[in-house]
Image (cartoon, rainbow, N blue to C red):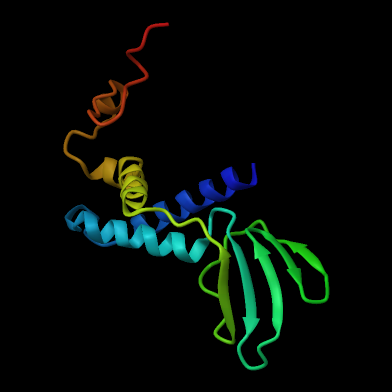
Length: 148
């Protein structure tokens, strides 16, 4: 459940970034895939195990597994929010166990995000209410025409 919530939050973050890109329709796919990968690397949406070390002293500060944290004094905490970026500059984040998706995974996430972008759907020719209601998008199955 925690992973599902974190992945959903990550995909929402991707949609927000897509909405802020000027001329998204004209961007090369490789650029979108790179953006998705960068967001994934800074968000840690899956449960990866990290050791965060203070650079000045070299002492271990905390171990992080997704939203779960234990510091070197044994205090635990839980933060369900995705990290907004890399560790603070005075800390070094060392991956102890890390899920590393392939380039094909990032391309799939990028394509899925583009297919589900409301902004792109509104900007496509023929994206009026009638065509949306009829399920005209050729990329995804239509739910309106299915029989039970």
